[in-house]
Image (cartoon, rainbow, N blue to C red; front, side, top):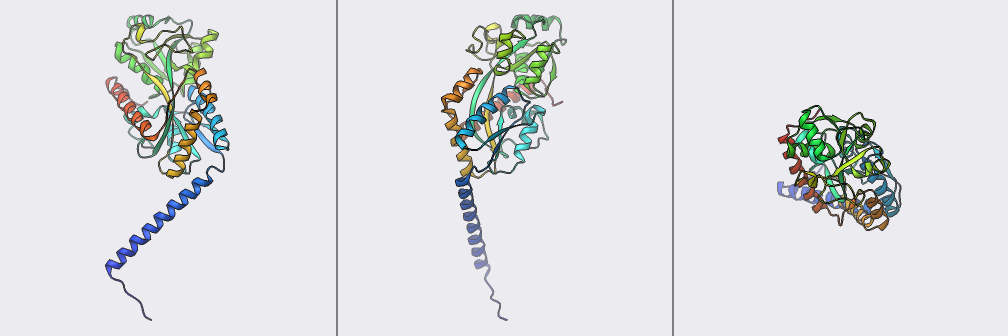
Length: 333
């Protein structure tokens, strides 16, 4: 039987043609899937416990995304390891646009953990910032801390004997307190919890005397008097707590830190689907309903989104907190 033979050059041309055809087919499939997307419920993963600030934002955003995308957006809480469990879960999820991550914590992880289950740059595609949430130094009403000066004085008189709670090692409220420690030279003992809500509850119960929490977690309790809002973390006072001074104006000039929220999806998610989700997020951020709901929680909605802007912001945050982690010799527990 006759068997044709081909030159090496022709075989290489054939391979190139086949690869091009495969890529073309993949692009067409992605475009087709994007045109049909979404056709079933979407999971919006929060890496923290229900009731915390990230959970609050996830539910507000999920409600608005449901209206824009016309499918249910279900909040899926996967707390633990300062958001690492949720982030790792999403990084390993199918890159089909049906699992996304609401993040505010991964920026400290590359400097803290050498054995992460994900790479923030390689495993995720950043789609959009959602908003910024000022933090607030809080105290139990029966604690000796009534002001920033009171905190500094007490900490210096009782070196290393004043505990503070956080949402876990590497969480933004942990990093914010460590920044305060770096700038003032005081020594405090860290008690990590599985999220900002449990840490705030620990302050209310007196289990720990102080913490730095996100404003959405404490506004209601502050009004009820079950905890004391001592000072906010931003340069200016927050409308949700207008009578609460800033940490900077209370004796630590230059202090500033803030929580923030953004959406990540697995990096291999087809670009047409990424673009569709990003467009939906922009539509949500233009919604008066969502902006008013976020503002009522003390959260400043992002003016605009965009992958490049968000990626640069993540990089700047990683660098900022890496310096604090190095100076305070913070290690994962």
